[in-house]
Amino acid sequence: MPVSESTLYMTRLELETRRLFELGKRRRLPSRSLDVGYLVHCALGELFGEQAPAPFAVTGQDRRYTQLLAYGDVPDAGLRELAERFAMPELFALCRWEDVKSKPMPSSWPVGTRVGFEVRACPVVRGAKHSPLKQKDAEVDAFLAECWRVGKEQDVDREAVYKAWLEQQFIRSEGATLLEARVERFQLTELTRRTQGDERKARLKRKPDVTFRGALEVTAAEPFAALLRRGVGRHRGFGFGMLLLRPI
Image (cartoon, rainbow, N blue to C red):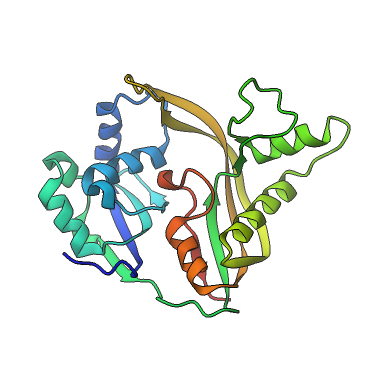
């Protein structure tokens, strides 16, 4: 089904929670892992291949269904067509197809537009100065990196560090500027990742898991559209980085 490359869609999907965790067992993930983002990443990849929507946000979960929103280039009908053609039967049954819905996102964002936002992000950096780690380019919590930079004698405000990190993400995008932000939720979360090499073993890595709410102003239309499509920060294919907008 042909789709315009310029059109970005927001899609709502529901996945059967039981089948989602059965997929984790088949993938031999650590039994104590509750990384729903990784499970959804696996499911979307097996359903839709390289056209899997991302970034995505898990918006709810109960015993029956895991709900998510996602940005992607393929709308609801096209996603079902992909899954019908290529997904294994047990993967096709994982999705509640009658409730899959898509909408096209605006094709233009006028400069000066102000919108509210919410984003779940993983504020990490590489190449932290004064890092005690052997691997100097290791990915580390932005808060830890700042603590190492200023030394033990100086207090560091975690929320201020994370807000500064978020502001830098918008600056680098060249599409938006941060007007205000607050940390709505913070925890250290164990994320499942595969090692490199032939064996590709699953490992758990603890990362900062932060939900921000705030307001931004569009400074350039095309870069802002690209920011929505790409997402904020790292681990965007695993439940982080989807920029959800609201009017203000």
